[in-house]
Length: 564
Image 1 (cartoon, rainbow, N blue to C red):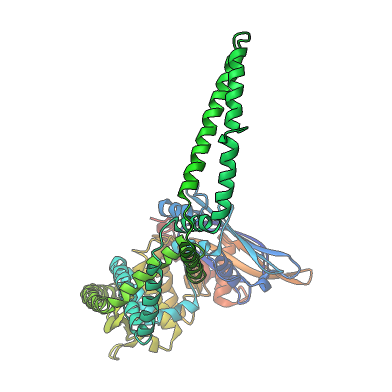
Image 2: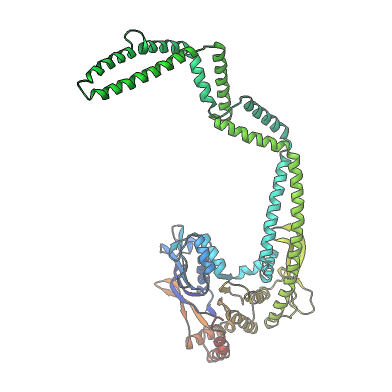
């Protein structure tokens, strides 16, 4: 339930702090006093669009803040965790929304910044807000189908059908894409076949380019390699003055020196190692000289191979790895296109199977909906006599339609407000007062199953007479026995049922209009109900009538003042 609602600088409200209670909270006040501002503030907390013009003139920012006390917060905490927000502490949830006059705004959940989508998600879990515009949504078949499914507990079946329908549409889109590509198929096949053949003829493999460039370099520079290797070999192992000969001579001298100087042994070992290394290099040069076989034909072939590789790189990728990856994708696409007929047949069979399964599931959903429709009509029928209608005035019908995301049914609520008249679609009813009472009857039934803890009604009693106000008040009080209800009303008969009564008054301070909101009890409440009965003139008759009205409702208020 909402424990506290604080509104600052919103429209004509400078600052208001509402302490709400469990049960039925009624809000009253003269037309234009600012009652709609309170419901607008709740809308802001539920993620509705903010209008910067709603900020009180002369102020930089308007804000709305609500503190909610909840029972089981497990599902709510999971939602908050997924949104990266702190959980509720001791069952308390704090929501805040600020609107800046220059544009933009901020939202907070448990003092942490939050996105508006989070507020909308929380609103769907916590508050069910019904105003005059909600009556219009009730007239739409799509909304009626949702009500029917919610009443019957058919969300799981409905979701299964939606998922199956989505998968069917995805397969149909794949088939359509294949059919749409049929005209371009021969050209694409020709292109892919050429690309795959061109790359495969090159016989590419990883590291191939480096090997070709190295071999080409040996052939292209064979003369220089031969001259340099011969000169180096002569310097290392030539007969006279070669490096090896000098090392041998130095070795002889060090052997003699070793007789007199112990450290010469280490030097001798170094020279022996150097001599071995010189011999290894010389051996490599000799092998190179013997293996040099310059072939102009081979060099030309390698040069052409490199040129071909460069052409492939310009067309298919910057390197051999990328070209091979392109080849893999092109070959797979070519295989898919060659097997297109098989794919089409497989998709058609898959679609037929899914459609059959969907029709079976849709039939199961329809049977469940028919059962729920009969039960809903019966339950609503029990509520209608107390609201001035025949018991059998309401009916919930279904008619088959083509499969869609919500199933294969179209819901149509029908209503016969007067005995002996045929039932007509609810949308054909002209009287908003009748629609309001049907809405209330539905909410009374659905509230027994709905887990949303707060229900808000904005003028649910619009265009309803005084005697019918008693029935509406009784119904609201019954709903409020199970959850918190906040109701804006113009009827004293409804206001008398409230376990908590808030009054909105418009005053003028410093030449500016301002809405004042306060809780009324005792004699103040009597005067407010009397004003609703007889206008601003608080006659003794109006006051006596107000006392009698509140006194008659007192036992009901005490019995239903706490949420069960």
